[in-house]
Image (cartoon, rainbow, N blue to C red; front, side, top):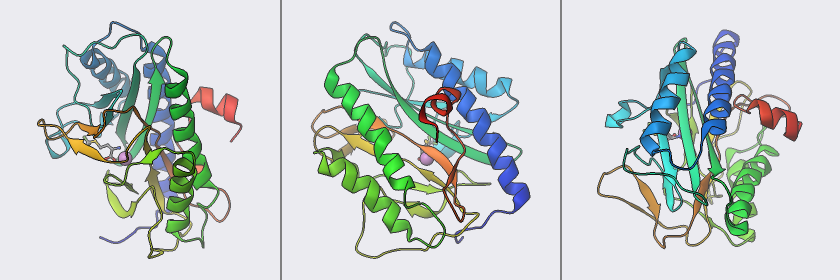
Length: 259
Ligand code: MF3
Ligand code: CO
């Protein structure tokens, strides 16, 4: 399958899917508190997704057993919810969620601090979010995708952070994962040229320490090799002739970011 350009009708469904997912993130993010298990978070997330008449994209995808990927502290992505894993004050919790709406996917991730978190953790979350928006400056028709990747990676690595290279963003639409791959670092080859109507999930994963990651024995959970904290920030976007349309900004973000 090659990179697809979505029709106006498809884009409309993706906008709706994005808006619903933004609301799911807002509600679930607001509900997080110390003492919850990561399974509680998944259950609540699934309930919210279904309350919109949507299906969770991740449930049973390649055998993934939950609706929400819950990754705590040094877990980078794909943490598997577990009733024994209780979140506590000072943790950082990444929630990665996908929904299917009228046959189209949206995919987004946010990292939240629980109670009082360290200044280092706070900075990591901010840098990860900002790296995404640095990439957005180049996410326009006619540019090379690599310019987006390079802007994300350079921003975070110039501040001394480890940019994860073993996992990448992706095209998205009627499938969760479509072409092209969207790395968070620039490559030598410039890759495809962006066109209006492409839909992408752009998702920087940034570590305080080494960019190296390892897979746990559960075959899903990805953790930092050195045990340092990791954050994740992902949105589903539409490429246009001008600024990208970001489909999954939460109501709070829309109020504060003025994007
Ligand atoms: N945002 C993640 C990704 O694009 C979510 C996939 S988790 C899975 O890879 F469980 F569905 F695999
Ligand atoms: Co994704």
